[in-house]
Length: 267
Image 1 (cartoon, rainbow, N blue to C red):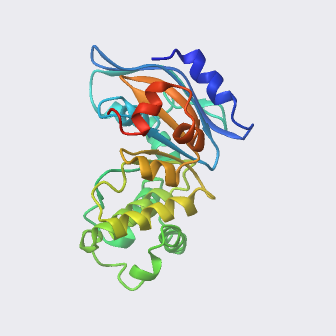
Image 2 (image 1 turned 90 degrees about the vertical axis):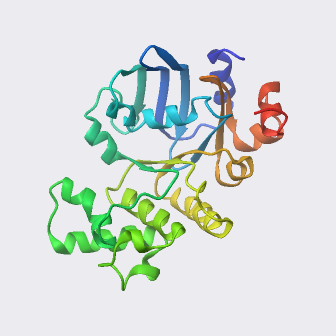
């Protein structure tokens, strides 16, 4: 295990790029159990950053800190900060509802609302008090186009989102996340419940989306991490072992532990 000063210096070797968010000294506790230990991470703007590591290492816990999902359960607490560079706000101190508007999330299994395709997309806007039909129509179309599903559903907008195939449902959930014009989208193993063809479709979509939005993705699939991400962070037992450009993590990691994991020798 390396200390965080080593992790920061490894990350600093990357080219100077605009930052979207910075994690500093983040600790997270499920009650009395510490799940994250002094995490430091730079998230670059309009890049894909992958979080990898064995089950239970803290990668999903870290991901969910970004949009305050842990607030939904009593006894959880944070220390440290996650700063959004656009306004220097600490996400851990901000209104969690506003945080979730700015930071969208797509889960492991597609979870469309039990509403029409149209209302799945419009929901977040209605929560914000937007009800003008012309505005909703425009955002619904833009979001569905952004998720590469418009042509498949444009004549079915009043049908239930749950009637779509698994891959289509996941793209609908991505469109739903896009509708509030988020600064970041979090993907928590977004293809784990999908077949290979749908998986490839989502991976291609992630590649297209990074031109619009910053992406943070958790994946157990090393090939997927190497395909879709620009930067990769390897975590183990709640600590950040190594963080760098994806190419370096997979081809020339600084830590033996990272090399063992990405090559399949442990984890």
